[in-house]
Image (cartoon, rainbow, N blue to C red):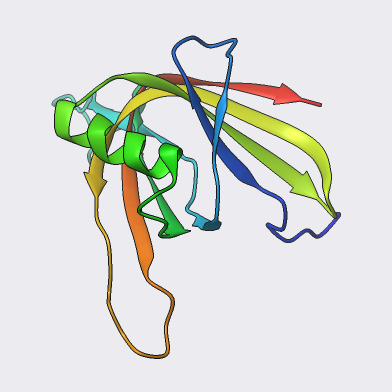
Length: 141
């Protein structure tokens, strides 16, 4: 199994699943991009214990952290999108040693946006959470 680090991973947003895309610069970290199946209870009177089958997938939130730049157009747009609950498409590029290996595209909205903390020895950050809506399109590059 090839091991990798997140160096070079990036977030972009756009108005369609095919772009054009705007990069959200100064990304510090991208959280897990996950889906989770719901549980469908199929326990009957003959069951010894509860029985379940996998149900429809539940889109999970994706957390991001950026080094804040209040004058950066993409950072300003993310804040405005959160205030207006604007739905967009998001593209996450996943790289191995700087080479693009996979892309995840999904629709969602900025659920949470913030700025801080403000400290003397720490760069100010812009945390944000994107609420996914629907499935993920995975592209192996």
